[in-house]
Every structure is written in structure tokens, then in C-alpha cells.
Length: 166
Image (tube, rainbow, N blue to C red):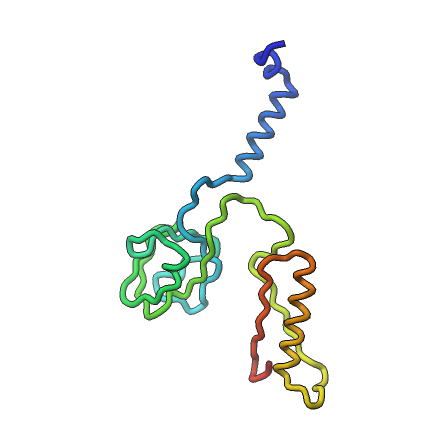
């Protein structure tokens, strides 16, 4: 039984087609370029309002986009080459964009939560002789420990203050 006769069998042909479709669905990227937009500020500079989370920035003013380059302060007219085309804006400090590395495939591993979750926690009653900030720090410590037990990577907890409450 030769290779040609084996490949011509319907089961083998279907299996090969399924494997090829799986590889296409995974979408491997051998050398991904640029950075992926993770978050865009609400009141972003004119010219960048069409930028959305998930877009890829390839170049910033002619230089290859990196995470370090995104974090730099920018002033004046900036030109971004993105997956949505070329965008031009006038920057006054930061670009107002949070980026991450472009994923090398469409696969997500583990219990990772993309985008994050916001939980608003407010104590029912104040404990005597304990500051609110100490209580918040204790809550953050407890949540971090419990979440890390389940294997979530990069679990970040930070306090937010609303109406001078924290």
C-alpha cells in the first residue's frame, strides 16, 4: 500500500482537510509586527477617535512601533500607520493609548480574562480604629491570593476612588 493510495482514501482526505482548516483557524503569525491596542482613552486627540481596541499600530512617525515607543511622551504632529490606515494627530504629552504585544496566534490559554473585570466594593460599616485604606489594602491582598490560586496570570488589583470614597 503506497502513499498515493493511502492519501486517496476518503477518511484520510477528510482528516487532512480538517487539519488544514484547524491550522488556518489558529492563524499562526511567524513574526508579528507592531503593537496591539488594548485600551483607548475616551477623550483622545482628534485623528485617533477611529482607533479601537484590537487594532494594530505598525509605525509611529516612521519608526517601528514597540511598547517602549508607545509609552514615550509625544508633542506636535504624529503619524501612526495602523491596521485602519494612516492616522495623523496632534499630541500634547501621551498618545492616550495602552498597547500590548501582538498575539502570535488566535489561541487563548488558561483562565485568562481579556479586558478585565471591575468590582465595586463598599464596606457596610466602618470598623473602629481602622482606616478605609487599610481595609482596601486587605481586600486587594485577599483577592490577589485567591485569584492566583486558580492560575490566572497578571491579576492586577488596584483601588479606585469615587466621590472621595475609597
